[in-house]
Image: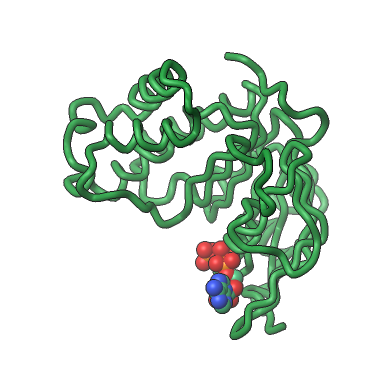
Length: 255
Ligand SMILES: Nc1ncnc2c1ncn2[C@@H]1O[C@H](COP(=O)(O)OP(=O)(O)OP(=O)(O)O)[C@@H](O)[C@H]1O
């Protein structure tokens, strides 16, 4: 597998990102960087601002302050950003009437205009999904976990420098979760930069090279899992997180 030579230096640079919701809290400022070959985990309580941060990074929300560069390109203005990031949101959105294969062809075709490359992505995603014959059935017949596996397999099969996975293993059975974690590590070994959110601390300890604790819309601490565990005198990352983010600092604050 070819490394992602399209980026020199960090794949993702996010600097001082702020989002102020009209009727809601202020998220940020948030800054983070992810280099090629690295898995970066955002950990935080419900409502801390993880998904909002991801949406700003991907150009879905325009930040009120700060900037994002993916391989040097601003994803909001869009010019040259196509094909730089693959994203699996927390809520799995699929077209119910399309079969699994039709989904793969549709999204792979959006990613690349090249028919040969589209076919390679579809074949790779089909194999990674392990959905077998089910890929010929409409997605409305899939379980929640099967839909998730389909979209994860597609994102893993795309050759984007940045891979963003919002709670990737949520709702997956143990075997599938173990496999997805292996595939996330493999994606990093292939040179991709991976941004994940997770509420599963054991998972984060296993897959992440760096971790950020986020609370009330801000990054409270950041480092390698072992560094954070040591810094907080904790037995594991879960304990370090609970020490770093006391309960009253959980959700995002009002702007
Ligand atoms: N479109 C919106 N309008 C107003 N407020 C919003 C909007 N989207 C998110 N928020 C608020 O911003 C805060 C952060 O939400 P966000 O979805 O980023 O949290 P999260 O860390 O991803 O949470 P979870 O772990 O529950 O998925 C919450 O208080 C949420 O209510």
